[in-house]
Length: 628
Image (cartoon, rainbow, N blue to C red):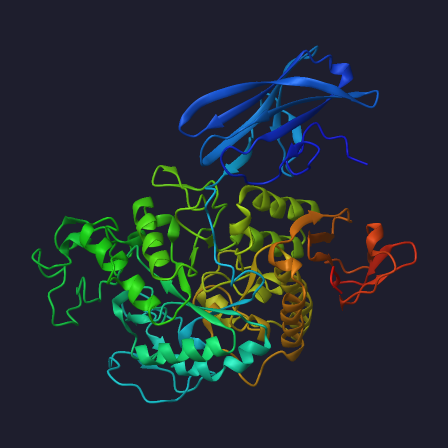
């Protein structure tokens, strides 16, 4: 029986169709009003970013029992963009405005509360995203720290400090001027990754995402020195081609990290440190690269990324730079010719629309099924930057994004959050994003920019304490045991939510660590947590045998506040996932179709009355494939 909502944007009795739509699709809105309010008029208020607000009258549409009545109307978006809406009611209580609550339902606005609107996303009808990534598993590798082949390298700069042992701690102390230089290396390389492909295949990995591999003078390589060369410590272009080919034979594709908002000051283009024989922008206004940069007062006063003078910003729309990156013989298309399967774009929200438009055109012209994933930390459907609303996901720019909202929801729930807020966060993203974007979301629970997931789940919070304190921290045996149980639950949610799970290298082995550089320790070969690895393999197998996880709809189910329970469903079947984060037994009443079934993965038990019993810190996954 429907709950007595005034309006709920995620329920078909109130809005149909649900989610994002294409232009000229009629959308029906229905408001359920208490009869005692004496409603004489109901209006749908529509706001579009670049047009004045409009108002559509709603019509009385009959009774809902004896106590409520329906008002409805149809609205048809005419073009791509975002439509924000609310409702206004004329009643015997005066004019009432309905505002959005956290879960997509409606509340009555008051003068003291900001009005929150619902969002209708309208995307290009021809928008397509690559099929090959849907339903798969991603694996993110920080190249210096995953695996080293031991093969000799040539042309490696002599100012790099190499660790003698793979198991040494990372450098974290600043240099003589108090600057942390990121110049310690462990020697991970492309051949090392290739040698570990069988390990990745056994995890169920179908896509490798590599942090930057181009020549750069730091271990993270986000300060690009040359877009045209692989960093010599990692190997050569032939090594990349070999990795891509070997991975492809195992059904694994490779995508690269593109850093196009800035370069390094120590680069062939800027050349502040005079490492290169050619003339960089810092050396002369006559340099072919001078126009790439924003000099306020040449040579020392220039725009730099977040104020770091070692990362001079580029003008992405400068014709010379734009051609160099997106042209027919440009950087994007050159590396796509090696067989890579796409790009992850660093700080995509700092790349202007014109650049992203040109980037997509170049990538899709070279390889139509290549994927373009953007780094956006917020809801990417309504993100604002550069002083205007961004259009990443409407069909002409990104295929999908890194899913920080999901990561936040997973970790917050497992650290004591409420399941209703968790489900609302997931459902809101599913409501705002086009379905072809949603299916490719990069569902991580940690990256090179965040604390390790196990540290977030069971470690002591930093509370502003610095690197000296962070370097000294290690999880106790008790913390680690608790953390492993929680990380298994986090991975379960990660693998079962809409999108594609992405493992940050070493999470599946139990790597811990606070933020950079402690989250970038070498992979603990020979010291892995085998319980975690086995669970990740189990989840990887689940992705292979459950086609519903490609594009199945997300539907939350009623559960206690410390239990998340939801279904994924489509024409291929249905999957149910339940996670109990509490230290006590919990249960949830399942829909009748699950009664009498057995749990496919996890430790829950379905009781004769249809209740799923979950032990403390446990999960259950049930699968019903239509063709079984």
